Each structure stands twice: as structure tokens, then as C-alpha cells.
Image (tube, helix red, strand yellow):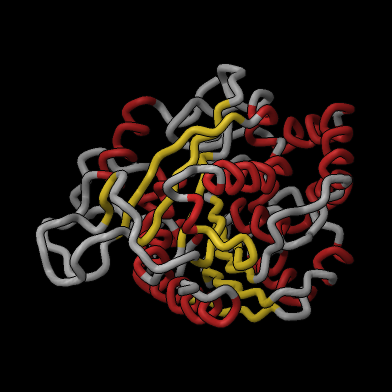
Length: 352
């Protein structure tokens, strides 16, 4: 079973990794690609491996003036300055950590360490699977494992302040962020919602990997998924999350409303006014109505895919989502502005 065909995966890599400008003015950002061993990934990875791909963006050593370095320098030495606030970042359904590079890079420029993953079986750089699509409740655990893996690294680990951690995510990554913040999933809730609302965007096959919702729900209702959910619920959450930045969240109807109402951290929601993939009424606005410290902002005319990296107008192999982008610059600007304000007040960038 495959997700994006190989030429499209190559186009994604080329578009996201090779578009750096030749002149850069501002702080240097380092990027490290890592691989963690994560047993829960085996059920989702197409090859059955326990591989979890981790991407870290961080402030890097270098001059602050204009130069010829690209904004992201692979494996650059970390900047001095003590421990820093950490942002756990989750991509959307069928996306990739690098597809959120526009957000991660800016946060690292501001002084934060950003840890993202390619969620097993549900990212556009590897083969996608039905299990990767259905077992989305495993996503928070992917980021917790990534945090532990980076914290144990002798070079990057000393940069992390485990007491100042926030979560951010887009679409299914918004679900991930909310779950990291304390929201609890109940399998029967999504089935009841999609039975009553079969045309809701969340209940329809997705552009990136068209698995019928009945197949997703059947896997969620299975004995192994229920057992795994019980195991996750019994595991003490760590690290503690101090703030949430949520972009166009998805699958909100799978959460127990009482658990959303119990989230006690400041939460900012950035929504697209023209989002038909994760309709605001049943997703973002539902969160805003329940989470006590949530504030939301809607970007007029922005669609769901405006929260991904902007597609180049002359891209030789445009990806399927490119045709659906409407107000990418406005969506990015709103998310970055909200994030910088939120994280400065809740986790701070640096401890001297």
C-alpha cells in the first residue's frame, strides 16, 4: 500500500529542501535529522520497522549579519546561551515534518528548539498505510519519544529545558497537540459523529491517502487498538505541556468533550475561513468553545492547505495540495505572530 507516488515524494523533497535563498540576513538555524527506536511505530510503518524519523531545528552558532549561508544549516553547531524552550511540532495527515519547516525555522530563529517527527505510516516521504491513517492516537507518543531521544543526545540534549515545553500542530497535528495538552480520545465518539455527518470533511477520504472512514473506524474499534488506548491512558504524560498553538485542527470530534474542557494551558487556534477539509464549526470552533483558555483567529478566505509550505508558482511537479492554496502568506503570518507572542509569555526562548 502506498501513499504519494515516488515522483510526488521527490517533488516534495525538492520543493522543501532545495528552495533556500542564497543570501541570508538573520540568526543561523541548525537542522539535525535523527532516527529513534519506537516500538509503537511497527504497527504503522509499511516495513514493520520500529523506525521513527525525527527532525530538530535549533539556534545555531554563526554570525547574525548578512551572508551567503542558507537559513537552515544541516548539523550546524548549536548556539551558546543555555537551555531553551522546546516546541513539539506535529504535521498533518500525510504530510511531513519538513512541510512545516516554514513554522519551525522561524521558531528556531527566535531561539526555540523545535522537535518534529514524520509520523509512521502517515507521512508523504514514505509509504503510507491504513494503520498509519487509523491509529492517529499514537501520534502524541511519537513526539514524546522524539523528545526523549533528543534529550539524550550529547550535543542537542543540553539545549532542552524539560520544564518549558509547548506543542504545535496542523490538522491531524492539531489533534496531536491537543492530545499532548490533555485531551482524551474515545473511539465511539468519532463513529457516532461520522454516522450522523458523513459529508463532514474529516469523515471523507483524504486527498493525501484516500482510506474510507469505515476502514479507519473498524481499526479503531478493534481489540488491539482499544487495548493500546487503555495503555496510553494509564501512562503518565510527559513532558508537561505549557502552551498549545493549533492550526486548523482535525478529528476534534474523537475527543471526550470533558477532557477538552479540562485543558488548563493557554491555547491559540489559527483557522482558515474557507477550510472545507476540517470545517471550523466541528473542529476549531468546537475546541474554542470548550477549552477555557483558548483564543481563536480566523483568516478570511484561507483554505486548509494554506498552512503548508507555499508552493512555487513555477514548480515542475506541483503536489496535489498546491491547487488548493489560497492565502498562504496570510495564514503563515498569523500563525507565526500568534506563536511568537504565546511562546514568549509561556515558555520563553532561553535561560542564561
